[in-house]
Amino acid sequence: MSAPSAHDVCIIGGGVTGAGIARDLSLRGLSVLLLDKGDWGAGTTGNSSWMIHGGPRYLEFDWNTTRLSTQDAGYIVSIARNLVYRVVFIIPVMPHDKNNIERMETAMEVYDRFQPLKKAHPHTRLTAAEALQVEPGLTPDLIGAVTMEEWGVDPYRLVFANVQDAIAHGARALNHTRVVGLVRDGGRVIGVRYRGSDGATSEARARVVVNAAGPWVPEVSRMAGADVHLRPAKGIHIVYPHRISNFSISAESIDGRDLLMVSHAGFTLLGTTDDDFYGDLDSVDVLDDEVDYLLQAFERVFPSIRTYRPVRTTTGVRPTLFKWRRYEDELSRRYEVIDHAKDGADGFVTIAGGKLSMYRLMAEQTSDVVCRKLGHEAPCVTATRPLPGNESDVEPAAELGRRSGITALAAMKLQTRHGSNAGAVLKDSRSGRMICRCEPITEAEVSWDGARRSDSTPHASSFVKHGWGARQSSAIPVGRRKSSRSARSEVYPADGTRRFAREARVRVRRAPDAETIDAPAFAARESPGNICVRRHSPAAV
Ligand SMILES: Cc1cc2nc3c(=O)[nH]c(=O)nc-3n(C[C@H](O)[C@H](O)[C@H](O)COP(=O)(O)OP(=O)(O)OC[C@H]3O[C@@H](n4cnc5c(N)ncnc54)[C@H](O)[C@@H]3O)c2cc1C
Image 1 (cartoon, rainbow, N blue to C red):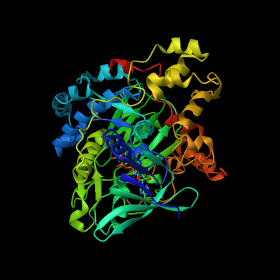
Image 2: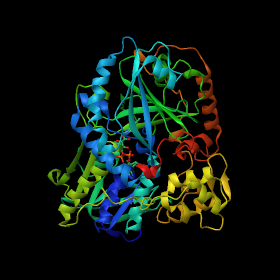
Image 3: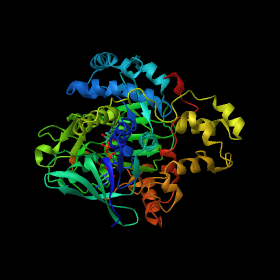
Image 4: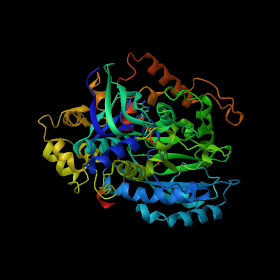
């Protein structure tokens, strides 16, 4: 074992929470080590619905979470404006829905009061005819609809932007590096033991160790002899490699839950389920019944949904705080920062619960606790300090494309990933050489990202190293087991959806290396900002 490295803080978990803490503490002048057992953002974060939202649903039972996440969403869309895009929802109201049109509009009127906090527009009420005019794919049976505006984001890029900025401010960040134990000195935690991608075990000393392991928080806290109770809840999405509608659409499920078909830039996420999860967090399957449950709900409001070809599914587990006796989707999304000094593990801090939409606030409050423990006085600056690529406005994409010998579309897509750094990315002599025509990705971009990942443990394939390969778990085939849940086991005809899902499963099984490129997954992860349908330029945020 090599000699241990020494840092002020070691953070376990490179999802959005851990990456946000690494950035916050580095900007406050502390030396930071960030470790993740997989790739950046590849845990729950990357398998989310990709939305920076307030969550109008929580207004009914968790008003404060809506307020906090709307407020933090406002900061996030300002500091990450190249990564976000407006997502406009149509919420159709059907006969016998749990909310009639009046109730739905009243809820939206309340939510409208929060919308300015995240720079979103108020709702509009639509008659059935108006709703059908803007989205003819909706069922003619609808009674009316309301609109709602949220933000979409590429969470992988958001995490990586935080990691990049942390590295730029002195942090060390190692992915594919699993923490296997904590180093203790009596009642204190003084570091971590980790295993890198080469299999070697090393130690790192830290004055404070932060557990930001999302749903794995209980597993990591047990290493310190502390119990943190979560009520993990699994959610899946069906992924379509294109937009089905220019709008996002909501639907009520058979058991009255709110489901969403979210139109991201170049792909659609249809989800999500919300079920208590008791299994192995490192091996989460998608069930036929879960796919059926989602399609059944959407067929009611969007009758042609089964004619579209899905390419894969995603699955993630929410790190929800424990609560007895509530349905999963009624659980609060609040979070908690826990100082384990009370558990005989001084120097060990856990952040549990929360949402992607308020990761910055969670990081700020965790960093405040860490700074207090270290007697370090420095203010948080992440609410206003732009993430890399957002320091200035982007130049017109057509101009950048002309100068660099690439199409305006390629330049615009590049800007959605790199913001005002897009010009610098293309300064590389290999600028115009495309390595992926459908996306499109230039060789220059691959080499730029690679150079900025120099502190990350390299992976065999350069694509995977750059975070662009399909992870096995994000290409999980549909349908391994049957759920026993009767409300979700209704049979529907073996249609195109099932067939394509099965074919996808065969493809995944045949792949010699599960982390080789999967074009649809690649497209889904790398295509924020669709030039045809984008309504507001990032600079207008
Ligand atoms: C289906 C679904 C949809 C969602 N949609 C939204 C949404 O649209 N908007 C929203 O705001 N929220 C959404 N959420 C919630 C949101 O995704 C999560 O709250 C958030 O991403 C959690 O981030 P995290 O960093 O805490 O956890 P994670 O992203 O899971 O990160 C934890 C990291 O810890 C690492 N780790 C674990 N153990 C170790 C170890 N021993 N050593 C090293 N590393 C380790 C893991 O590899 C992982 O990368 C959704 C959640 C789900 C499941």
